[in-house]
Image 1 (cartoon, one colour):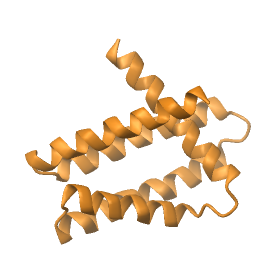
Image 2 (tube, helix red, strand yellow):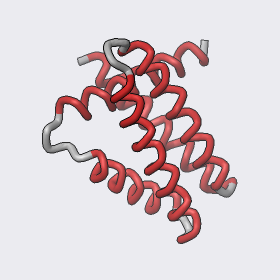
Image 3 (cartoon, helix red, strand yellow):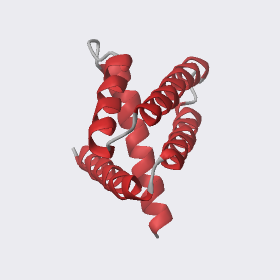
Amino acid sequence: MKTKIFLTAAILFTLSLASSSFAQMGGNPQERMKKTLEDYKTRLKLTDVQYAKVDTILTDQMNEMTKLRNSAGEDRQAMMASFMELRQKTNSKIEALLTDEQKVEWKKIQEEAAQRRQGMGRG
């Protein structure tokens, strides 16, 4: 049951990312990534080394999402599945960098994101 809920939340998140990327003319992906990175820095109390590594991880994710979007063609379902897999890999890479204390806050961040995604799915 938890897996089904997680997968649904991940799909909704991916859909929201894709739709906001396509729908927002002024929504610059780099700006959104930097905002996310700064939020992580503050909430997780990232060290300078962690910050640099998370920056690289998020930049790689953004670049890979662009490639996936450009190569997906009409197969939106495959693109969404690829986005979800990429997001899971990104989250795992970030979590691997964190201390036990930071992982507690990371879990809260992930839960809040899931709640936001569920709220957007109801609209």
